[in-house]
Length: 300
Ligand code: TA6
Figure 1 (cartoon, rainbow, N blue to C red):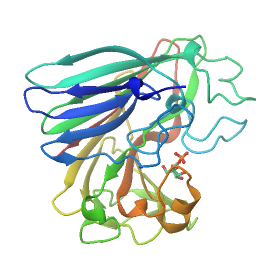
Figure 2: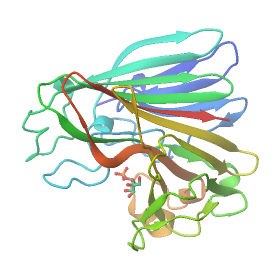
Figure 3: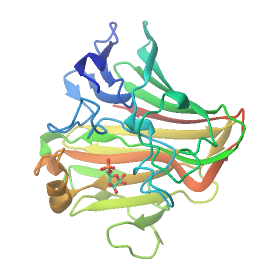
Figure 4: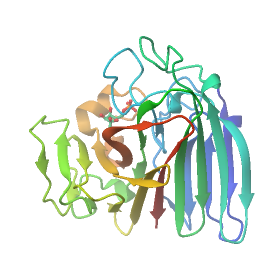
């Protein structure tokens, strides 16, 4: 089990900006700059390691969503295990920290009847966090340390705090920058279409995967998270230093799903929006000895 002792505060002395990160899942819990908290964590979130944190920036790997076969828990094992603190720093430019999860230390979340549970694969994951007054950067590095190539998905499941509990006010809370992406709507289950929406708003349960048009790699999205609280999100992915296409998931549980989450307040859907960049398309395969990296820069 984990405890609050596993939560480390990273302070950028020069600016006063600060982050909190939990060793459980290497989950970033907070990024504050000035008097603004950018990240949302549910008041009911478990921080004892009994389940993934409901909020912050959960790390999703090696699968996004439910398993296609076998019984690995939804969103994989990365967010369900205690990572090892490597080091931290505090310089004039920024402050940050690094955490590592070696596959041999994975105790939960493998399920069974899959190649990870059967130990066909091996990997080392490194989470890096960097912050200053104007931005926070989080990244997930995936090293194939085994002898077999493995397919994977990876995603930064970022929960944003919405100022003034305005998540359902289209003029104050919306996401722009995903027009032209192909959208798969997990709520309506409608056929995939190309999104022409300049602004994605929350008027009910939203659970959509936006895949980039061919040739587009990095994601550049503006998230309006309440009055005067927008952020610019830039997300990139690489495999062996070659750029990968980055998809984006937009999620708000709304009324019914919120009630169904034991670690989420029934009314907290007014206070948050998830915008989650990920390597989701074409089931990317990582060869032995190679490294993939998913990075998001969140500029305030
Ligand atoms: O990213 C959106 C999503 O896949 C939703 O379908 C919802 O399940 C959300 O993730 C939260 O998943 P979790 O396993 O953390 O409850």
